[in-house]
Image (cartoon, each protein chain N blue to C red):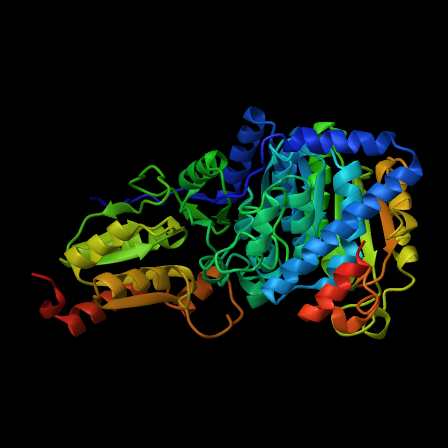
Length: 295
Length: 324
């Protein structure tokens, strides 16, 4: 059975977004924090049931996904291919658990479907498939694919004279792929100020720190040198994320790069900021303990 | 059937491609061309002059060229991603797999100057692996048209087809295919009738196969010629009818014999109707220095190559291989 939105999903999402946008900052932050941790809890259950997953990268990206999907993106779960939707491309495809839990929470499909995560023939593969999961824009998994696709999507919007925006979320380790930097040249060349690139800067790749592997610093300088308007943001500060993501381009005529400083495994004391939790699977006892922390 | 006495006019199929792409853009504003600095070699200068906003040159960056093509398709455009065959398919193979085929985006991959077209520039510039690489990708239609008219019709079909297409666009000059059978996606065209053996060809090898068939006919051997311009999905009915009705198959391709047209035919034949075959194409070696014509000679992708293979099949398989 194909995954589909439940009736009313679009209006629920849009009303929720309008309420968040109108709310005082503190209330908005509280609400987004609660949503993010609810997503983390669901994500952790999925990983526990599947016995597989990438909890570290899921949790470093969850706050970014939550702010985008519930407070920023102009999207339509009931018409996931609505032409004028904002595009969100998750280049770090291994963080599929966070993406699926967020999409279900946003109403693209039923939360019950999340129980099939990585089961045989499930739509919810270990890396996202746009042909099976509504809301996914492009199939990722191999790293360094999202930015070129987002550049094309942003270019299409520009050719159309449309104000729809394009966001792409990359891991930091994956910036070692040269394809990102090729695409960065084109983004600058075409002046794609409708494009916002978010780096989930948790400082770890699968087995070690990025700086001990193929160092990325000075990362902000690199993006600036490639023609992006660069800002740092605390990737777990919901209000800071909201302000950074909901405002227009930082600089007219330039694509934006937000370096979101994050912690791998954010939210669980014994997982947070530990490289060994890239794709380690928590035990039942650890899940119970983690769920109590994610409030 | 008469053999032409006058030298036929020869065509670079990129010209028909470029003219047709301009027509498509005139009628459909979704049309965009995406290239890797190959504005000249992909013959996109006129297109760019007519539709400057619809020519996207990402520079020498094939991964971004294909990925951005997928993104443009995501935005409702119909991108024609144009680059020399070896760089389009070799450098950007994973983007073709993940962003185009697996994501099933409406991207048209236009592979310029395939085969030996770059002659003396050497194996790095030859496109003789593309069909093997791309034939393994689900969702992707693989087309190898033979002359300007078929190139044009294949392109028109690709525009209407909602899904990813790989299209070889030949640079090596070829005559217009005679008799011309209109392009039909997924259907092999029978260009000559015959019951003694079948020659399966595509692209630049079509005129070679036709000339060989004429020579065989003069010596009393009736060769069927199948133009397999759709490599994938394969026209199984035509191939199996050839196996059943002619009992011997020769394939000829400007490509490596491991994984290309010959392999595609053999996979079907061996599973359903095994008959003796000979595969003409590049063997397990990198091409030496030489022009496209020299390299065709070197690998026996020639009229003489077909005649030798026919002799070999007729002698070694004898009458016992011919079905009753």
